[in-house]
Image (cartoon, rainbow, N blue to C red; front, side, top):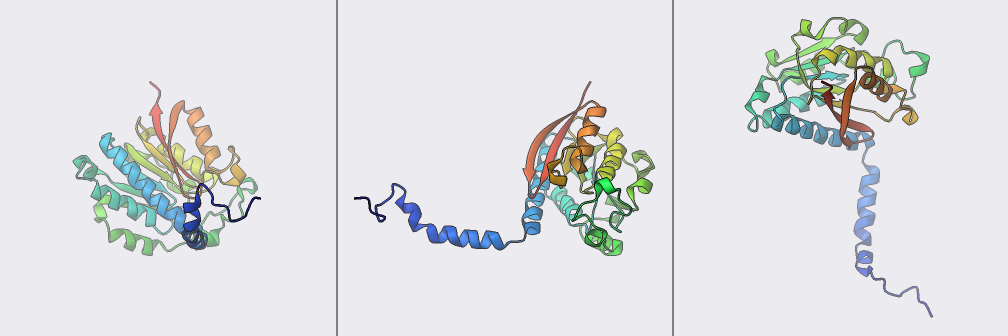
Length: 242
């Protein structure tokens, strides 16, 4: 007769049940935002490492700074990887954000979480935060909605090549403006980090994913997926067709 107390071939796992329960308790209680940001920081570090060993030239461009945490982390990563490639010290960091949220958003781009009150921040606090990790001459923060701040060419800001582009602006139109602005700076080997890639219920024609897919197709670029992170972030490396 079969007994409920019959030993399993994996009986040792039963002894670890309390550890599994404890791990589940802790993980379930950790904020998704914390999980996402920790994995995002790891992804940024990996990208800086890969760009260093590949000797990719250019600067760091971030679209959608919010409080500047990712921007500051990118600066720290560059400093700590300069022993691998001294050229990384020549990098400059450019951050673009309205610091006022999304502004007027078309009905097709409305999202239950992407609201102004969730993403408005104080630019002076952001600048002070960045100043603690970088010399003023090594970074530039450009405020304003992208439809205004990205009207000028990258060269007007001193940008000729991009090593890493991080787009965390959430909506299709803002991502499209950021990508189009960056086009002339993109080279074979440029890494593009896209946050919230699976937003809008995974629709590949909407949000950042929609803008990126269209951008790659229209400009005859090749994008190879490098890694995923957090709650929907993704990294690509770009190749320009000859």
